[in-house]
Length: 68
Image 1 (cartoon, rainbow, N blue to C red):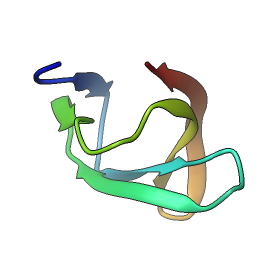
Image 2: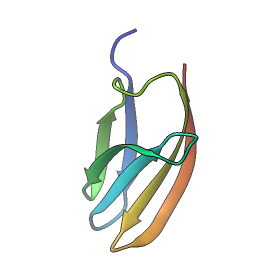
Image 3: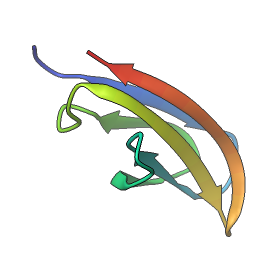
Image 4: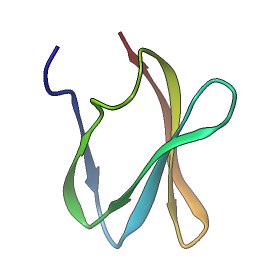
């Protein structure tokens, strides 16, 4: 399989996104800027991940993705 990307739109400011595995271990982190952000998720192994976006230590959003 080639090229798995996650598209995230940030309304304003800057933030960080962190992906956690089901054990709660951070496995990937990326900086986000205002506007559209594209994250390459090819390096994540198959499984379930929880993601969290933080701006100035405040949680903006959370979610879950499943990579097959």
